[in-house]
Length: 102
Image (cartoon, rainbow, N blue to C red; front, side, top):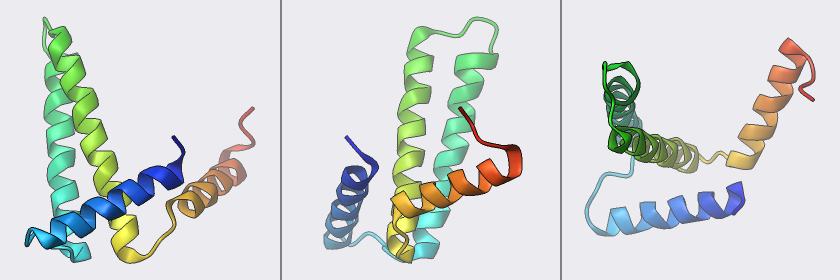
């Protein structure tokens, strides 16, 4: 899978979400993304910081990271950004700032 395929998948999910009466405005998507970040932090706490983390907690952390990624792509989509271009620009910025990564 490439980034463009996932962006198309998220776009289709947003269309379906709209049909079900869920908000599509960037503000709503961003607020939901922040909520997902909270879930990532909670899953991280359970998977990595508790004295005896369970393997299921590590899997849950991966699932929450996937949800957060969906929302990042959804924000890009609702604001009209091409995710591949966002990634390329970010890589260029980081390479300029920190040097080329081999």
